[in-house]
Length: 201
Image 1: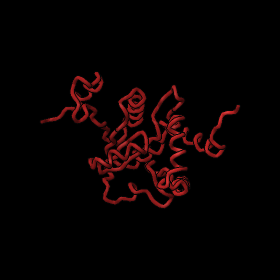
Image 2: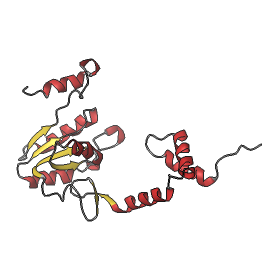
Image 3: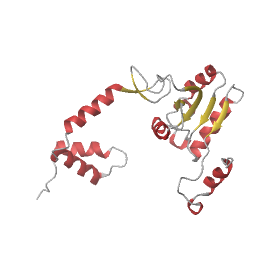
Image 4: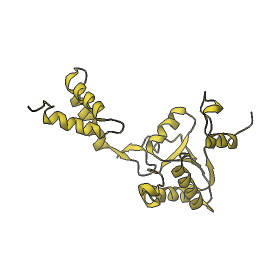
């Protein structure tokens, strides 16, 4: 006797949801059923929003952040400080920096980090456009805000070598203990960075 299963359109929806990061088979199934059965779900509105975002959102040609073909909210802001450029791995890294309100300069999103194991080389990153901005920037400060993992360190070192001799001030974000965190939970590298990034009290 054949086992009952979802109809083909539902299975197709589940398969697509499973492709999302962090969504396993069970979660995808629950989401699909919720979208189809819950009155508040409005799957057509969701589908339209996905299509609209796919059609209209691009990576800004200048900074790499999310933009439309007409404008980039960061590049088009005249109040930003053109003398400071913060280099991040991904466009999503801009969001927490912006939400903190601590940075008022410009950004450059690399689109990843160097990782030979994942076959990500310098040619795969937005490094040429970064170097053009450095050349045209005239003595700006470049802040490397990359991850503290092996790939982030390798990318930072590579960029530092590329910028050696250029008319820029090269800095990196201090990395240390999170707010509310104790020393007993910190790893060795975090403690080293916390000590290196210390300042007057």
